[in-house]
Length: 121
Image (cartoon, rainbow, N blue to C red):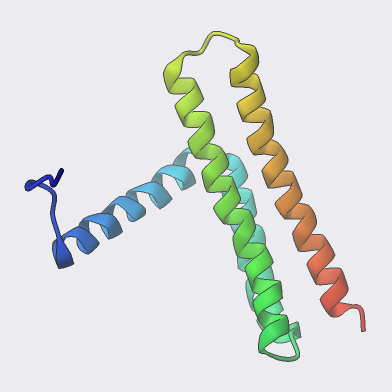
């Protein structure tokens, strides 16, 4: 079924871009962990460009850092949906939040391992 009211082409791209900007603003304003990880990224991204010896190393160093931001945004999305459903404690709600947190933790571990392996010469 085709929704004739949905924008298409360039209008759809512009709307999607606007939604993405709203998402970045929202996560920055509402999530302290994202702000901390963004600060880390602001330090590590230029350092990764400088320390990487070739394109592959730079891609690994930068990609691992950017992945943390992506996973944090997904984790924040999960938390927002769980909180929207209800603030009462529920085992599955807690599990969903814990799983998101575990994903962020693993992505931070991936940064550490990637940087150690690439930079340990």
